[in-house]
Image 1 (cartoon, chains in turn blue, green):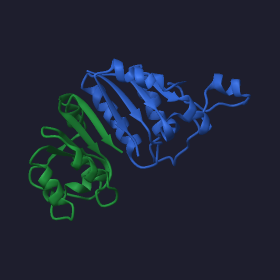
Image 2: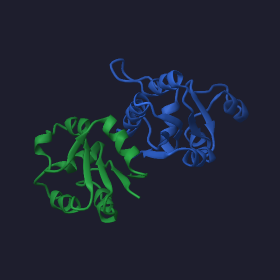
Image 3: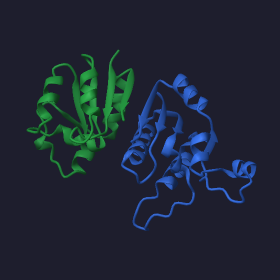
Image 4: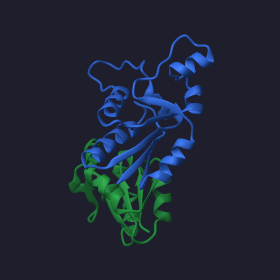
Length: 130
Length: 102
């Protein structure tokens, strides 16, 4: 079955970022397909490359990035939510006149239409958040 | 059309769980995850409300989230089923739609 996942909570906030990650892993392990993961509101912080938790803690952003690489996932970050929170990829940083960018590999920036399309194209849409 | 209601807030902290139970239809399923897992415990100020709803809906709890809060499955209300993440996935497949009560 084809799934779209929406994540509205950032990493290390409550538990939803971890729940979503574990749910996605379990989906893939059962042979289901993830059409798209859409990160909205504080959920966009799951795409930051500048997070440095203590060495004995999990690095959620990297886990998403690696899962994306392993399963060729489409991880989409909402542009308006990202701009408000200071999260940008190389192109967006250039467009805004910033010298640096902070989006981890495997994520891309796009708009809310991607969430709607995910809902239409998938058999199930599951939302995680605060 | 059966719906899976996913609840993630403690019924002792937020009203979303009670709100969910006031909106479920016969044949739906309710899954408690994260802080909502504490709602599975018998003998609380919330347990009667949940037991009443269980006449119409099937109720599940994510076992790992219950254990993470130091709660044993022995203390659950009779009839609640503990599932793992694979069981969570199965519930989303078995129900045509899902609603997260955030």
